[in-house]
Image 1 (cartoon, rainbow, N blue to C red):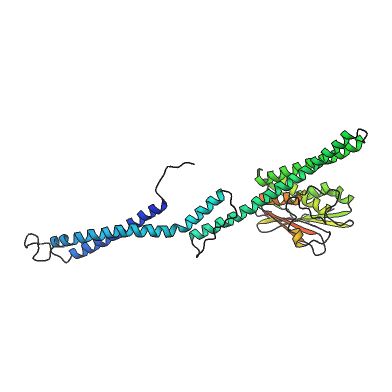
Image 2: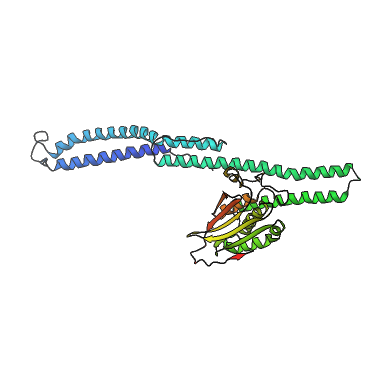
Length: 370
């Protein structure tokens, strides 16, 4: 916004330094004057002015010298304060220049202020950290936008190709065309809904309410039990009552995504999924673990990125839109929680979501098994 012009910080500091020096000089001269008066008699009426020491003679000789000293202190305070303020504010000038560069779109610039730790260097280091996170976030958003555009363009291009075939070949099987268009359209809808859910969770536009993660784990497991039976996967769930606060719908989506991924990305036969909840001193924990192929830590670290599926884990059916774990990560962070992915030595993965507990409570075990 527009602001009226005012004095610079350097000029204000200069005036402050000069004023402080003048005040200190005035107090010092006043102390000297009071000290001298104790030893100089006041006998103006009995002796001549210049014959013997007296207060009038002292004032006559001390006042010009004091005025000269005060003038010197004023010049010294202004000049020294101006130079000292310039030296003290030099780091702030670098921070200001870096801020202007960021305002012009340069997120790669860093201040890297040298020297020992002080308030300016703490500010510069915090600014550099903020820039690094902002640059990473912007790069992530650009990748996300590019990937989302690619993912959305694929079903649209497929639909266009199918319609072009139908238009050029009137004898083409209409039923097959409709089925393929329906499948492509369903995938586009699923992807769009996943993107909207991701955006909603990222903006934290939800109402917080008491939620029990153990109940959500049971609900998600029951809903996905037919899929698990179809794929020959055994699902077990157990744990403690785990009260937290947040959006029940989003946390249910988080739990459902984790259990769904654990079922789909599993062994071809005789796979297993373990869903558990536990309580820690200040947090509640949801853990989803499954069997599967052995995964490298490098691959696991990329699975929470949007549209990163891990080629070795993708199946042709129920493969999803590549946003399952990205949504889980966003929902967890929106609830001030953490998401941890760890490959299992025997194959598969262990995923842990840790959220703030609602309040201190006594854990009441409630074991269930399917």
